[in-house]
Length: 264
Image (cartoon, rainbow, N blue to C red; front, top):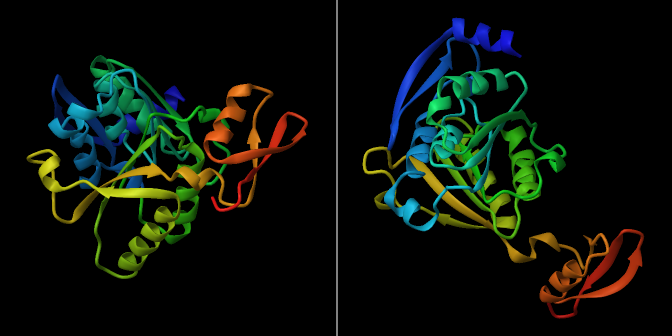
């Protein structure tokens, strides 16, 4: 992996991003796809993490954070500079660039930071338990990735997880329809709150860059009348099921089967 990082450093250019306690120096690849550069929507999200509105409610110190489609890792690095424990994820070929930027900015990290590969739609068990915060910057780009992205958001999210998504509104080609589809998919599983510009960073905001806050819907874990709850024979899981108006049906090995009560 070190050799790959060295290769990246030979074909990159740098961008500096100011944060509260210094400067993040972010390497961008000269050759590669859209994941290899710092996009404006990533800057808007990164700077929001240090905006007064966010910091006054959601301090990042000691929070567990996962970034999806991290690209250069700039958003995750900003979170790590605020004391969060961050795991930045992207496709395997992008991870060396994230690791290069981690190495360059190690002195800025007051929490912890790591990079791992993750393809949307695949198993996320190695990233469990659910984090406090999921970050996604400008990843609404390809139609074939929409459902896997939302699926991964659902798999990673728990009752106490907040998702922050930034994206640039694009009006060419099929992009408006793509964004509409994304909103439809997301609203099936999450409540969606748009963060107004006046609550964002006073400099890093734009009318065509949208910032959304998502929370998983309470009933999202039980979309069907029958649901399997991984209980592991622990009473607290049964109690949790009771809070959701579900009733015990029958044990099945290390699982218990639960059923939504009529009228719920």
